[in-house]
Length: 449
Ligand code: PLP
Image (cartoon, rainbow, N blue to C red; front, side, top):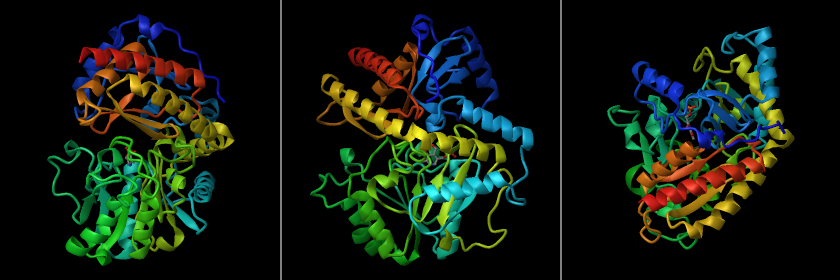
């Protein structure tokens, strides 16, 4: 494991944002698009492992990993070395038009890691959105069917195609219609807020049955549906973990009607949940897997990995200039080695540590409605009242802000969830220290309401 500096209390002793950070925030507001979603004024100077420092020297424990991206921590020496070595050789050559070994090696590795014994092939991208876009196009091309099913609460990206599948917050969509037609959204397996007011398992996974019993009978023919797009754990939608039978039933449905099952592992993949891909928690094999975020520890890279028999599109049907950049591929290979050599195991162990502590403190904090997660993808859904489960969005925002002021970076998601997704190599000490800060911040915010 890479050495991770221990935090001091520096961040607690100084006011944040400091003068330098404030200056940058002011300049940013003039020069940068107002559509970005900054929750608090953290202005990064440098990072190491699961620790980051701002431009005024304040130090923070990072439970965000740059939105689940810096899987091996900030500036892991092995990843930095791989980046430098590749930069010395060549920075770019466009994998669409030329060949290079590091891209081929990474494709072979990803094909071996993605679940399922069938041969697979990879299309490389720069981001998660583009990986989803590629999956959307391939599923349409291969099946000849233009309709798709996606889920309420889903986040698949913000380009026109991916945005048409996204349904987590209307602000993502408002003002951009018309989107790509033919996408139908149905409720996800979100048991804490079941759309049908049923209880698992007596519901018999009604949310999946609804697709067959209602949607396919009244609204759309399954013969016209090319793909189902699904996140194994909804990310932006609230860190929602579906119940045990959800994915097996969804796979059964997709297989029955010959629909391509697209597994969006952009946030959940690459060891974050304690397995290479979260869908493995349910022993399910999808047809297409979308990967990005943590795959290259922060270098921009995405991948759409499909069963080879689906890759029926011809030369020129899809491509890009930067996808599979050699430096990103080298960083990904170094990242994968580290995940294999122990970080995935650490993610599972540290995930349990988070859960054990959060479940233990839950009874003392009336606002902690639901605590859920897999590995290092952990959500705490805050509510105004445990019985009514009314979402406590303002409280959540206050907790995230209070964490920042005390030296912990956390983020929100869903209606009122605080999410933690630190580097996979975070140490037990930092988990404990970060959770101390969270608990203090939560108590303060609770008593202020
Ligand atoms: N899919 C999921 C599940 C995501 O969490 C995200 C980003 O948060 C995306 C797709 C879009 O990825 P990107 O922001 O890299 O384009």
